[in-house]
Structure formats: structure tokens, C-alpha cells
Image (tube, rainbow, N blue to C red; front, side, top):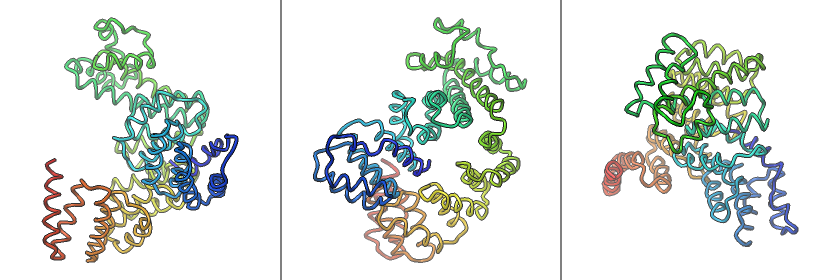
Length: 435
């Protein structure tokens, strides 16, 4: 998810306050700074405006977006939460979800995404930016709804929307199969799925007659949308779960086939095929497609990240590193690239470069947990124990119950003969292990 795309999407309606009859000078100045790309100045001006004006969800949202554009993710989240306490603005909810996903806070973002999915709009310019979050957070059923909206609204290129629907439907099929396996009667239906797979057949409907016979509300012409609408009441019915797994699997296949038919030259389709090969463990074939696309269509979103992750999965850190670096150069706000670069440098034992890369990024902001652990480890490996302790203590304020921080502090305090502090951290570590 690229912040530049967020700005493009929001700019069409930004700023909300301009629609009012009157606008104070300080807010106008803040908006002017934002639109000219002076995000730090805009944040300071919005912060003053928030303090001097009556509670405003719009002002808090604009402050959060100014923070977001600078990579001040925790501050952005704080502003969005403050805005939502004043008023439930759809735009604020979506921007908050984007930030939660960026920080991989999927347990927190899932309920937020479910709420967004209840009120999807064909005119929502932020939805294409937010859509990957539904897949990353495993909101499989909601992702199908998002896909339908994207296809109808045409806010996303049609080949990309069809591929997204294929991915969402595939994830949904796997979800329904997983839920089916948890039911006592599940194995009876799963055998029909296995039989189709083993026979290389695209038709897994062999158990439809059995499913219909065991449920009064199911019928042969059930659509995926109808089945999903039945879920809230019949979520544990194996017959419904089986039919949904088949229907969503069929939609996944139909979406990709339609994309192949209508957009045979789509580079996004090739990228999707490479991802499928990578997921199946066919890394050489996937690598060949990825590298070919990198030459012919270097502008493809996620491409460098996907190749970098492919090398990462194989432990080829020296090959992954330049890809993550190129990803960051193309999109300086992509935190996944920052994470990838840091991990590569740590794995390669280049601790000095890891410090040089990470330390300046978190001078003014609170590091996320992974950065706290990586940066402190780099200092520790170089024998710079006091600096490692300082990083961990900063992280401890944000993550007071994180056992990894307490364990590392315990070790470092022991190494520096600060036994009173070491004992305190040992107690906190044990408390975290046994809450």
C-alpha cells in the first residue's frame, strides 16, 4: 500500500473543511502546507488548530494524515482514534485500517475491516488502496464483497480487479474448507473435494445432492452471494460450508480465466501466476517469471517485494537485500521494505549498516517492535550495551508486556552488572510468560 496513492485518492475530496462556509486562518494555513507537501509543518499547524478549536473529527483526521505522510504511524493512529471518538467518519476509519495493516496489527484491524465491508461504496476512492488489507488480515468473506465492489465501480483496472477477486475467492475457499474440517460431518464432504483434486477435475460438486438433502434451505442453484448471506445464521452447517468452498473455488477459477480471456497480455496476471508457483514451492519457475517482469514491467506494484520475499524464504539474504532497497527507493514510505532491509542486514551480520540504516529513522518516533529488537540486537552484537539498553527501554514504554524486550534487558543488565535491574526484568519476563 503506497502513501502516494493515499494522497492521490484523498486529494480529490481534501480537505473536508473547505466545504464549510467559513474557515479559520490557521486551518487554511495547515491545509496549504499539506497540499504543498510540507507535512511536518502541516502537522504542527493542525496540532495547534486541534488545541484551539472545538472537537472536530475532520481536523483530527487531517492531523493524522499529515503524520501518516511522514511515516509517524503511531501518532497517526492516535489522531484517527481521537477523530473516531468525536464522529464515525468513513474516511477516518479507512485511513486507520490502512495504518493498522501497515503495522501488521491484524487482530486489531479485522473488526474494523468488517465494519468497513458493511458499508462499501462504489465511489470510494480509498478502497483500492485498502483492498490488500482484507487479504492480508484473512478477512476472506469481506474480501469477496470488496472484489465485487471494485469490479462494478471500476476504481481499479479491470484486470487487477479480476485478479483480486480470484485471490479473494481462493482465500475464501480455503477458509470454508478449514471451517468444514472443524465440524463432525466435515470429513464426509471433504472426501468429495479430495476426489475431484485427485482426479484432476474442476468439478467438485459431487456432494451437492447430499448437502441439499441435509439442509432445508439449500438448493442446486445456490449462488456464492446467497450462501454468504446465510452464513451468520448457519455458520456451523457443514453442508453450507462445503457448498461455499466449492462455489468460491469456482469463482476463483472463473475470475482468472476471464482475466486471461479479456486481458491475455496483463502483466498482473503473470505476476499472479508467479505468486501461485511460489506458494506451491516451485521457486525456480516463479523466479523466472518475476525476473522477466522486473525487466519488462518494473512499475508493477508489489513486484520487488514479492521477489525479495521469495529470496528471503530461501535464506538468500544477499539477493533479497538489493530488491528491498530498490523497493524502498521507489516508495520511501513502504515500511515492509524497511523491515526487509533491516532483517537482511541482521542476517548478513552487517550490524554497523543495520544501525546506520535504522537509528535515524526512529530518532523522533517510537520504533515498532521489530525495529526495537533489530536495532538493540545490532548494538548488542557490536558490544554497545548501553545503547542497546536505551533502545529497549524506549520500546518498553510502548510494549510494556512484551516478554522479548524484558528478556533482552535482563541479559544486558546482567552483562553490565546492573543486577537490581536485571532481577526486575527477570520478574517481568516471567510474568509475561505466565500471565
